[in-house]
Structures are given as structure tokens and as C-alpha cells.
Length: 537
Image (tube, rainbow, N blue to C red; front, side, top):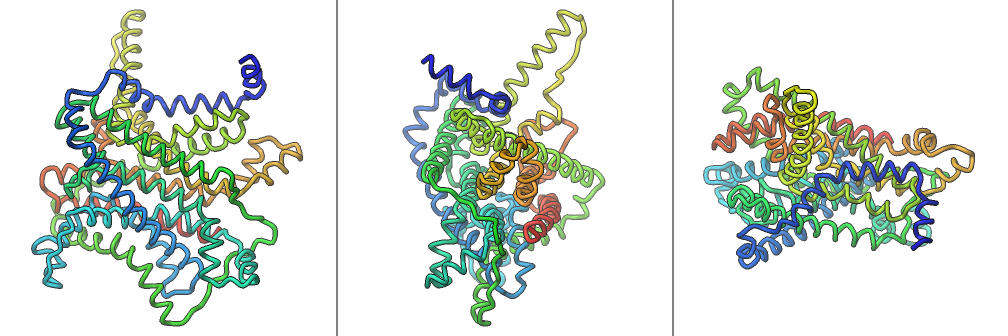
């Protein structure tokens, strides 16, 4: 025991202390949730375990398997096709493939319900009525809404893959297909698994689409326990079980690849050269990459534009435009803060010498697995406690009466966003940092340069595409966030997602199209910028 303490004292440095401080700051809401487990579940917990828990588990597992298959299929293959092959409209398809991220999955669900419903476009054109309000329909909606997480991270990796590796494979007699399956795909594993992890967290966290399609999942069960049964304790128990599932997924993945290094030598690096194939193959490849764009973006967009055309005169006002600017400002600032904390976690963990501290840093990933409404409660409880003590201090010692200082402010909302979406920023940056290897930083240190200097001059320039990707992914996600915003937003602040929800909750789904379109169009410009940065680098 004495030796352990001596080793801890020897290995502890300033980065260890900073990392533990940041982890504690990020983990307060999550710790608060788990502390509340001590008080036990609510009265309906026994009924839920006996009659509903198996349904939640089976449905969630089915969604995970189905969504994983389609997101990997279209995300990875689309990324490889636009990087490796000459196809019609290749440059346009590169950024069109990212655009489904701009549409909230619950809005996509509403759109497809309108498209396939009685009197919808599909019935008018093909004289057919298809029921998509089922498990398979929900899998398709979630898959084609979320596959860009896999596409963005994987395409960034493929663009930085050296053609020397492919040429070496072909010299050894491997064809194009074998090279991709046996060499390129395994090397890309950190990238597409990082994207897939985000997809799985988003699937398990989804509420709007699952509820609209009538599918019982963990998240719909959490909301039902909290809002319908008014048992926050039961909701927290379900949330803790959901967090445990996500944590197991992360640990299994880390365990599988912990002894494998993923990096490319930078010496004589040459980018992959695109292949020009036959016209028929080009058309087939184009059709393949068009499918996710059509299903995930174009069809829902056309439906929303049709609805918006019917209602824009009533919805488009000066107050509405003010809400749009508020959403932009909040989303941008939240994205910057989130990316900064992701960098802190990754590099403070890298620079500290205590192994167990590096494992603790993974707590930051758990926020994405917890429903936004539960994160909001985890933020509210400690901030209310602090506010009450501040009020008491001013009243008892200074005889000054003040209101709450922290709660009801934009800072609390941004803090909650940072916790909620830290994993979104963390995964692509970590995947790219793994690719760099250790040789560059170790060489810099041998030349007498410190950690901060090495990061600023060497690692940061190489990580710019991943950092910008993370920034845009978080920006778009914050624009779409609903339950967390509803609970924590200041009374004088509103967002486009909340406005769309207000219309939908009042059974004015057609009017919800315009704020939904604003969310889409405000996400298009940064997505185009992201595409330009990835292509350039």
C-alpha cells in the first residue's frame, strides 16, 4: 500500500490535477444522477421490471442492430466511393451526404408519416399505401438521419490515407476489393467505430421519433416514468441502466483494440488517386451514394418545403427571425466550449502519467448516453443547491436580498449542452489523434519542447480537420436539441427546436415545417464549410 502511494506521488503532475478537476466539473450532473439511486426506485419499478423492461431491452437491441447495419453500410461505402472513384457529380455528393445531419430525426419521422400517409405524395404518385409506423420504419428513419456520423469520420480518414499502402497491396497481388476489405477497412476502424458509437448513443437516446412511431424504448420509458407517472426515481433507474449499456459498449470496443496501433507513416505520404471505371459502374456507384441522400435529406426536405409553402405567411415574423439568431448564437458558442473541453480531456489525459486517471476521463463520454431531460435534472439539482446557499449567504451575512444567480441563465444551458455533446466532439478528435502516433510528439520532446508547444506547433495543425468536424457536428446537434432546452432555457430565450415542438404539441405539425427548415438551412453552410476543409486537407 505504501508503495502504491509513493508511485502515485511520483507520477502525479499538473496535468493529472487539471484532468481530475475537469472530469469532476463535467461529471457533477452524472454523479448527481447516480447519487439519487441511493434513494431507491419509485413505486412502479416492480411493475415496470415485470411487464415492460424486457420490451425496452428487445426493442432497443433491435434498433441498435438494424441501425448499425445501415449506418455502416451507407456511411463507410459512400465515404470510400467518393474518395476512391470518379462518379458523376462526385463533388456535389461529398457534401450532400452530410446534410441529413441537419434534419432532426423526429422531424424526419413526421415527414415520412406525411409522405406515406393517406393522401400523401407516395399514394398519389404510385397509388400505394405503405405502413412505416413500425420497427423497420423507425430503423430506416434513424439510419438515414444518423449515417453521416460514420460518413464524416470515415471520409476524413480515407482522404488522409496514403496511396503507397494501396500500391504495396497490389504489388503483392491483391485486387481492389481485397485491398479494401483486408487492409483499408481494418485501418479505418477507429474512424468508423468512433462514428458508430455516436450513432448508437443517439439511437438509445432518441425520444421524438420512437414515441411518434409507437415503439417502446429505454428513452420513451424514462419520459413516461418521469412525466406520466411522476416518478423521477424510476426514470433515473432506467437512465442508469441505459448508461451502463453504453459504458459496456465503449469498454468492449476499447478492449478489442487496445493492443493495436492505428497510424500511418507520414514519410513520402501521397493521397489516394481516384479510379475511373466504366460508365455502367460509375452510374451504379452514383445510385448507391444517391440512396442515403434521397431518403435522408431530399424527400423529407421536399415534404417540409411543401408544408412551409402552405403556412409561411402566418409563421414568418420578426419574432421568428429573432429566435433564429438566438439559436445560431447559442449553438456556435456551445460548440466552441464543447470542443475545447474535448481537447482538454484528450490531451490532459495523454500528458498525465497516472493510468487510472486516463480511465476516469471516459466519464465525459457518458453524457451522450443519458437523455437530455435527465441531464437537465442532473444540472438543476447541484446548481439550485449552490444558488440557495448564495442567497442565504447574502441574506444572513450581508442583509441583501438577491435572486438566483446561476439558474435561469444561458451559462447553465451551455454547460448542459457541453456535457450532453462532449462525446460528439471527443470521438472524431480522438480517432485522428490516434492516427498521428507517438513519434512526432516524442521527437519534439527530445528536442526540448514542452507539451503545449508541441500541441500548438505540430499536433493542432494536423488535427484541424477533425476539430472543425467536431465543431460542426456539435453545432448542428445543439441546433436540434429539444428536451434539455425546454427545461433549462431562460424564460426570455427561445430556439428553433423549441418553436417547432410548440407547434407540433399544439397539433400544428404543418406550421412546424418552417422552423424545421431554418434548422436545416442554418446547418447547411457549416456543413459545406466542413466538406471544403476535409477535401482541402
